[in-house]
Amino acid sequence: MKNIVKSIPIIGSVAKLLYRKLINPTKAFTTSKNYWVERYANDGNSGNGSYGKYAEYKSEVINKFVKKEGIKTIIEYGSGDGNQLKLSDYPKYTGFDVSPIAISQCRKLFANDNSKTFKLIEEYEGEKAQLTLSLEVIFHLVEDEIFLEHMNKLFESSEMFVIIFSSNTDKISNDPHVRHRNFSAWINENRPNWNLYERIPNKYPYNEETGEGGFSDFYIYKLGA
Image (tube, rainbow, N blue to C red; front, side):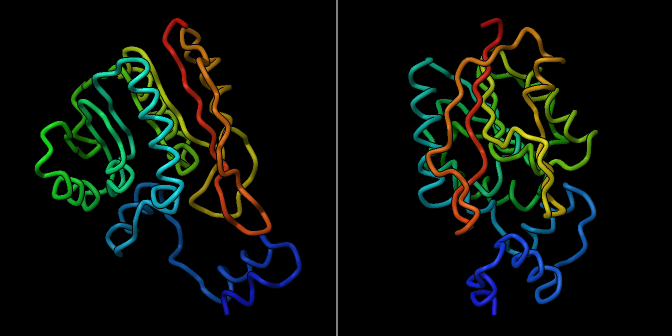
C-alpha cells in the first residue's frame, strides 16, 4: 500500500501525509525528547542521514575540516546511535544525547576506543572543545526552550568552531517532530562575536518528487572570525 501511495501522480507530500495520518497512524507526538527516547526504545535508529551515502558525505566534510584546522577536541550534541561516528576521524570526542538507550549503544559500540566518551545531556558538566557539532538536530527541536538550550550550549561550550548541519528556514513542516528554524538569524542576534566562516551546500539536496536527499546544509561558524 505504501508503494502505491508514493506512486500516485499527485502532490507527493500530500499523499504521504494522508498515508501517515489515515492508513499508517503513529503514536501521538508529545515532546522532542520523548520522540527520540521512544524511537530508540522501539529499535529505531538515528535516521537515513546517518547511514549510507549521506553518512559518508557528512563524515567526509567534517573529517576534512578537522584535519585542515588541526582540531583536537570535539563535542557533539545529539550523538545518536553512533553509526555516523564510525566513519569519523576525531582525536578526542564527547557525544551527548537525550536517549539512555542510544548512549548505551554507543558505549558498547566504541568500548575499545578510549578517544570517545558518551553522556546523557543532563550529565553535562561544563565540558568545552575546540569544535562543537549539531548535525540534523535543530529542526527536531520543536519546543522553543529546548532550541534555546541547545543553541546556547552549542556556542558556550565551543572554544573556536561550531558546525551546524541543518535546514535554515522557518518553513512549516507537516511532521509533528520537525520544526524548521532560521537559526542563523538567532546567531546573528544572540552570538554577534561568532561569524559565518563557511557554508557548504548539501551534496544530496532534498527532492520532493522522490523524497530522497536532505534539506540540511553545512554552516561553519568561527569565534571572532
